[in-house]
Length: 143
Image 1: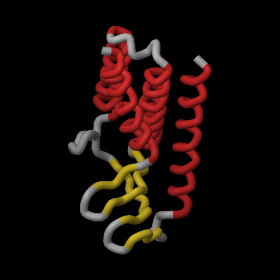
Image 2 (image 1 turned 90 degrees about the vertical axis):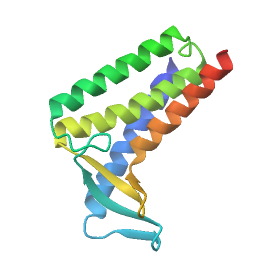
Image 3 (image 1 turned 135 degrees about the vertical axis):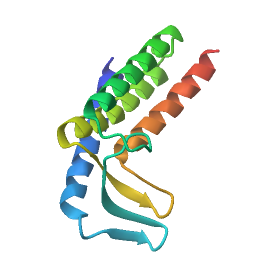
Image 4 (image 1 turned 30 degrees about the vertical axis):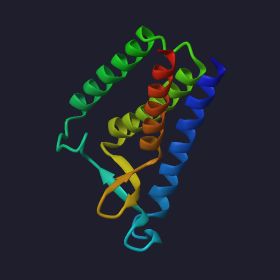
């Protein structure tokens, strides 16, 4: 349980600190790391899953249903009992929880890593993707 708690708390803290830094530093002052390709720039993301939904209640409800589904699925598939499963769930829930916190209390998610003409994201999004990859690997290895 220590590994789950450690990864979860660490993920949330790092994401909150990076979002705080980005909110103070990047508005009006983007950092161009690779011109035309990669930059740090503050974006307020008011959309949900690439759609123009603005309702916080809908977003909250869908997020809770998805998180509960993933937890139940992990228990049913027995990925939770592995060390990799615990780390995967910790990262997934840390990223999703931090973004959900932003959505509920700010009305938007602050994204700040931009791959020009492709996407914009934040550290919580990276945690979600890495968590899902770890869970997929844990599931495949359990078979």
